[in-house]
Length: 485
Ligand code: FRU
Image 1 (cartoon, rainbow, N blue to C red):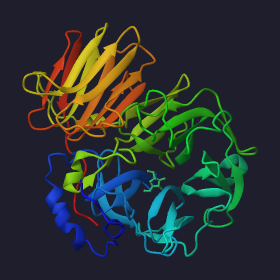
Image 2 (cartoon, helix red, strand yellow; image 1 turned 45 degrees about the vertical axis):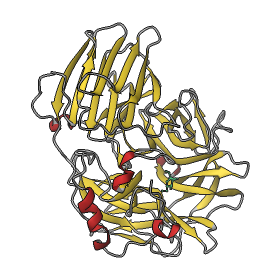
Image 3 (cartoon, rainbow, N blue to C red; image 1 turned 90 degrees about the horizontal axis):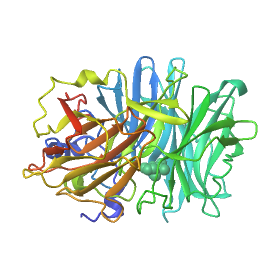
């Protein structure tokens, strides 16, 4: 693995030419994806500024241009008319002011009238590398280019640690106010969310208080990327708790959870109606964000980073890594989120191909289970061995996904085998394969499982038990993948 100096990681990008060779070098990699949003070069992590504005879905993501390393972060911009086909738009926000001199870190978007507003964390560091996180904003005008405000909306609070970031903005009509949720860590090193309020988007912000979530006072050491949405009259709070292990999640100390409940902006209390649940049971899913301005009270749109902080992926050798998951429609059913690829996604299907033991590199695979314990292995070797194995235990109603059988193994110290407990007997799985990722939607999205996976040339077979019916559709490419900086 390449060792990066701080200077290399925090190098400022001055012109597109500086990464052109890198793009040329990676663009034909067998692991570049066809229908997922991925970085043009370097590393992508959290989705940012996701929302609907004047007929277009804008999405940004954390981007480090230089390689597969967490260094100086930009917001890279992509856009879509349908959440299926994506165009590269180039740099959205660059770390070019005093307040964000060492990174434009994560944040959110809000559309109002003709303007789109971006809220982000300015990651300032002094010469001695002391960090001060500022909550900053930019206004995107007619030309779709963000113009930053001269001054941050507010700085960090002294009674919390330096970990205060990732503004998510919401408007609460009953209060006629905007609220910003900030992920934070208190001085006892416990994860928290802070709430700021204002009657206008770009000024007048004041600290309202700490978000209270009864029962979650000691739940991880930092809550990254908190985000709240209302679906069918209930509030759903998501965040990415860190610095703790959680049941069923191996040795990972980075998670993405949701809690269903109700948010009271008078008392700043989110009252859970049940325990937390995992947003996705896979190996690689983090920093999920709800889109703003969806305009349908019964559904939310969610996107997340396929990847985890601190993890390493085989494409690091090629100087790039990470991608976004498929944007997902979320609905609430019996107190649980049910997820599906966005409406119309099936338009990417090519003609169904016969299920004869070979997998395309870019495909949708539908598995139908007739009952009983079941086994499927995807990406097996020519002799049928290895692969990503999926075992269903009917008595326990749990699916176990195991990636130890793949040639390319990674993050072996974190986890390679995980369970996905189901809420109903396994009937169906829709599996979306895209060169270096696999997303499984079980029972029409009652549970999902997302992972990176790097099959080699001899690993495109599959095996399925007699009680599993297999259908396969190749999928068309839908990301432009052009070199736009
Ligand atoms: C989550 C995170 C955020 C931060 C960003 C920096 O992965 O650590 O809290 O804003 O990444 O890239």
